[in-house]
Length: 254
Image (tube, rainbow, N blue to C red; front, side, top):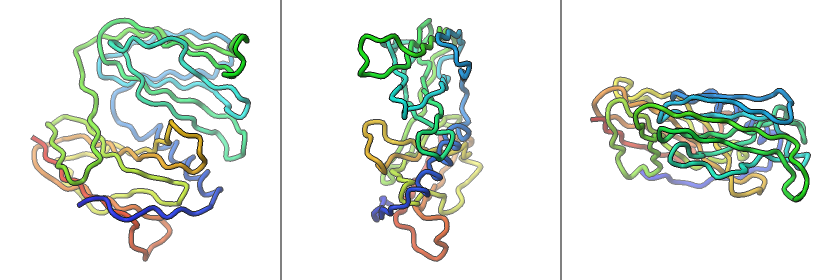
């Protein structure tokens, strides 16, 4: 079944902020895969860390930030993409108040054996000749056998074909500023799949207020067989209203 319907926008700023905060919590806690994490809240100007990871593992770097000051974290050197790659980044605000500080989270993937560095600086981009307010460097050593990046699927019309033990994501267009979010529309065969968590990822290529992003639903293939995973796009408080959109995916595990 294809995704159908349309998203109806509403102008509820407070609801949007609260939903974003909830989504940020899911983003941090909903992922069940192996990962290496490093957080820096020391306030020190120059921070250097050493990290060890296995191929296929996720590397999560969390740094204090406050975009309302004009400062932002950015990579200062290209990554060695034979060793690690950047998957995404997101800002998570600590408080609903405008201008409140928070954390900038960077998700990297260890893709090959070797050594590489993650070099970042905290700057106002328009201040060209000024020293960065802070710097962060992570020296990363990656070992282990090659691992595969979890696959992503977004087309309900195409069956999902995976092997037992694989991890994959179902990705759905979403916009929590409207009050809508995706939820499971029915049970699936838990002898075939295990739901590990879900998260919302805001768009990284726009600064438009209220722009839609994507929801990522993570599954592990735990047994051979076939099952359907169905979703509906609803406002949780509207109990007797038809979903504005729906989607159903067929998953075949070999």
